[in-house]
Amino acid sequence: MDEYLILMRLDLITKDAQPSPEQMQVYMKMYQDWVGGIAAQNKFVGGTGLSTEGKVIKSGQIITDGPFAETKESIAGFITIRAKNFEEATNIAKECPILNGPGNSVEVRKIAGVDNTR
Amino acid sequence: MQSPEILPHLFRNEYTKIVSVLCKHLGFERIEIAEEIASETFLTATEAWGIKGNPENPTAWLYAVAKNKAKNYLQRNSIFQNKILPELTKSQPELSESEIDLSPENIYDSQLGMMFTVCHPSISPEAQVGLSLRILCGFGIEEIADAFLTNKETINKRLFRAKEKLREEKILIQLPKPEEIEDRLDTVLATIYLLFNEGYHSISQNKTLRKDLCLEAIRLCSMLVENQITSKPQVYALLSLMCFHTSRFEARQDENGDQILYQDQNTNLWNYELIKKGEIFLNKAASGTKLTTYHLEAGIAYWHTQKEDTKEKWENILQLYNRLLQLQYSPIAALNRTYALSKANGKEEAIIEAEKLELKENHFYFALLGELYLDINTIKSEENFRKALSLAKTSQAKISIQKKIDQFSK
Image 1 (cartoon, one colour):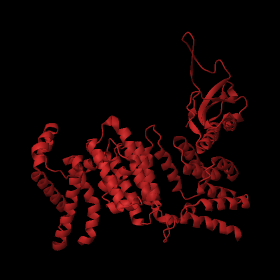
Image 2: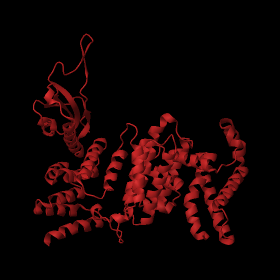
Image 3: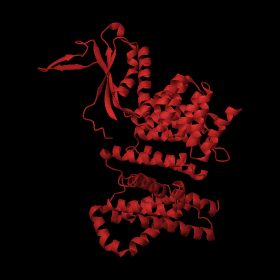
Image 4: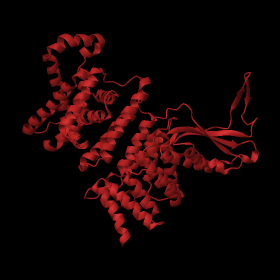
């Protein structure tokens, strides 16, 4: 088993993309059901959602509010999972509920340097 | 009350108090002597009360005899007098002067300290539970052997080795330092929960003993919430969880000792007083920011005390299992989560999720699939129940699965 990072990117720039509290609750349930399903297969390693505010520090110690000032997509959360190979990791990531929203994306990366003898 | 009835009851309550106090007084290295003095006290009581009848205040009588026996021991023990006592006087000056203190406060402090001593991480979880049962709950070696489904000899050896280890480590009978509490508390809570599960899930047929184990676990946990230093949210959560589980104890078994499934239980047999207590403790557990598995399990157990089969109930149970599995995976939690998913989101979705679990050695896994396919695909349902039957290990499990299969031929 290898470990993979699933990065969830959300379009948070456009005003109408901001969910209402009720919608947020529905999204959270979908998200929790998805992560719970991964954990039920004993493939959940760690990870969490992220709040929308953030700071970006650039070369030269320039600090800005962000990351949404520069890019349309911001990282909404990440989880790490255990999977046999890229294909399995991708299949799990494909079911991520944030993909229901247009403009959103999910990125799968293999975690390098993890001891995969376990 | 005549002595035959009063003594076993007193034994369970007072033996552990006397041992804890004496042990705190003499030091853990002399735990066998503390146990011997406590045992002798009860032997003396049996003889004396058998002839003269029960004293007016049996507990005070026991304490007085125990004190005398301890005093005699200290006096005739010249090594203690000449070698150990001067040492003790150096490090703990109040000890040499002090009387053996059997006041309620000192009994409480001694038992609480003892709890942290016997749950010391240097000994195995099995030994921790064994010592807790012996020293804190006053169970006989035979009863402990019964609870672990093993023999007296094994238990004696296990307890002996554990005591040796604690002696080597020179563990003091006291609460750990505040900065150590959180870590050590984890072990104590794990031990209490193991003790509880020994009673709740053990396949031993001795029903009285099993319930006693659960109640003792609740008593020990209650002692922790009574102390300001140890009354942390996770302690309330565990206590709440155990109250909710114990509330259904009488409803879980029929006269033959067969287990009754949750949906078939007679809810009139539930103990509503314990459910109420569980709710109060669960509220107290809600302070702080640390979310433990005890919190989540208590939440799940709470929703199981709600009789009505509502969508809200199963939605809440599902979300709690989602989080529980992220904290700590277990096959049983994974299966229960899938069952909750079928109740909250529908069977079709649950089947897809269930197929992913791949717990192919587990008869519960196939029984769950059989249950999910029941109204959707009868052939697949029966297939899965048959697989479950071939994997089931206990006769109890086989009988209940066979009942399901029999329904297909009707």
